[in-house]
Length: 151
Image 1 (cartoon, rainbow, N blue to C red):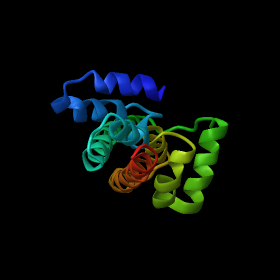
Image 2 (tube, one colour; image 1 turned 135 degrees about the vertical axis):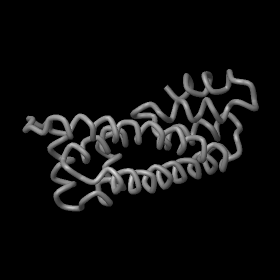
Image 3 (spheres, helix red, strand yellow; image 1 turned 120 degrees about the vertical axis):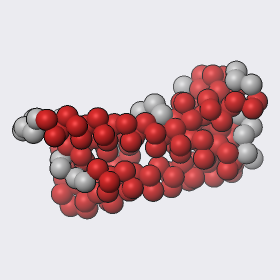
């Protein structure tokens, strides 16, 4: 998978590779962490790779938050939770938005995690702020790992 992402991003002209990293980082399960890793792997400066990956992931997450918020505003109802969402709900009840934002990406992608929290009734603003913090931290961590591994 990483090789395919590297080929995709590497096929862009050098001056546009940051945009390719932002684009792939907007995809759930790729996120800022794999995007930052791929950016470093194709030769982008770590700061550029991490920033581009974070921006792409953040833009996607914000879209999920506001779409989910609108849907929730229109129809609030009980839904049966999948095992992963039930685990996320327990995390949400225990640690709130900050805890789920920082640790939730170990369960589900940031887009789905943020949408679930808004669906649980969390403030959209709080979810966006804490998810931005989380996305930047995870992207930075994996970007630095890439520098260490590939550097």
